[in-house]
Image (cartoon, rainbow, N blue to C red):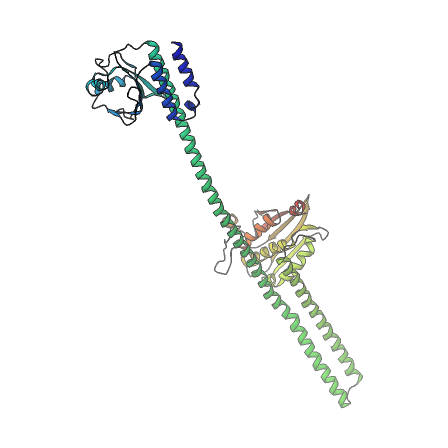
Length: 459
């Protein structure tokens, strides 16, 4: 190939916008190199339609008339011989365009009016398919296209195919960037919406948990009030009896009939009634004290050191009205020396919900109902096992029991939040885990919680 043609090809191939996707500038550069290298007056890039029925001008530069065109098109139905030549996907070298079989159809309507005598159409290929041609048109005396000129034009056509690939790649990247930007905007919007929904759900969950706590405390209040009535009633009866005994003693004294035997009987009645009043008032005071502590524990969210054995003893004392109605015996087996640094309120709520579930769902009216609560230390964890000998759990209940609002006693007023709260308090608050132990009779749960709360260590 002649040196000046090689120089032009090198300059075009090194141009940055051939590979950066700027197809407009690449088109002009390639056509300018065609005009200069082949020394022709007209050069254009024409692109085929997908069905090859039409070929349209991408850009045509006419140096002779100092014009540019991009709105021309040729149809197969008008120029079948030319399109037949294109179908071969080979270079059309029309040295004499007015007589060449491939271009003779253009003679009267195109070639003669413009003074075009020779044409060189070089196929443009992209990904193996012919997509158009670089059309070089010579004005003046007919010329013979040399092998170097045909090769040069073919190399420029290949560079245009490369530019098309770069443009498609850029368009794809831009579309991908736009899609990513749109997706990121949607994700950000949805994330904001989801964050708002999650925040509302957390508030609703907190409200439901507090409502469940208050409901449990309300039930305790009713139970304790009923339980306190018994010792208070006994005390009132004893005091009334003392009033009557004192009145009888006073009348005997005033009548002068009081003797030693009557006075000794009075003292015996007084001591018996006084002891009865004291014991029953102490019992009532203990019930009220345990209830107050339980109420404080269950409504408290304080991280502190405590003895789970003593803490649960107070709790079970306040729960006695609940399980007494179902004739339940509760066995608490925890070493009083075990100390936890955790949330006693959460532990109270868990055990309260479990005992309530056993009484409401697990036990009937028969005797022999029993709950065993056992606690041990295993490495750095406190393991609490809760077991009752009630009706037990079906496979469906095992699967769904920790889901919010799942209950087997909707008609009886069950909220379906009890075991969900147990799960959330164990996992989220106490940073532990809960396992449902399979057993033939009754229900059994095992809780494994850190002896020292991780939140405290992290703080």
